[in-house]
Image (cartoon, rainbow, N blue to C red; front, top):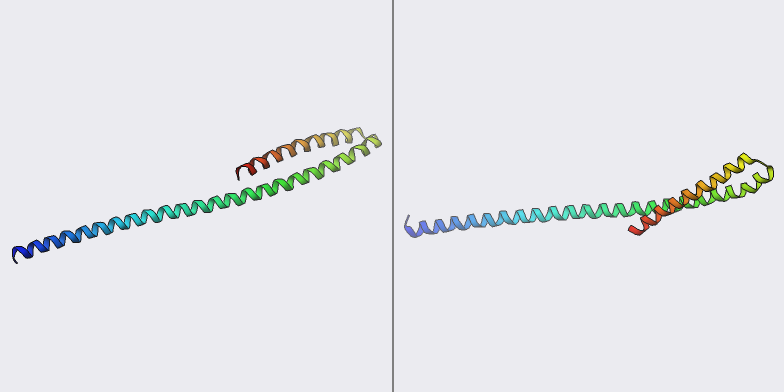
Length: 119
């Protein structure tokens, strides 16, 4: 083999090694991009799931508010009847129920407002 051929072989070997290095770097870059895209996609899906759960929570709190209002209405209608019957113990219990319902309703609505404010 002459010197020219040896030089060409060395140059070709060097270029092949450089090519492999570039290909390896490109593979690493692609793998990193794929990992980033995969994590971002999963994060987006989790965010959407959270949003759906928040919407369901709001619907549940709205339903609870309606039920509290209905319970309060029943108790308020029963209070005059308990007074008419002279049922002091029942009257006291009904009044306590109304106070409890008002407190629960206030807490319920406060939570619903907080959830609504973040979505």
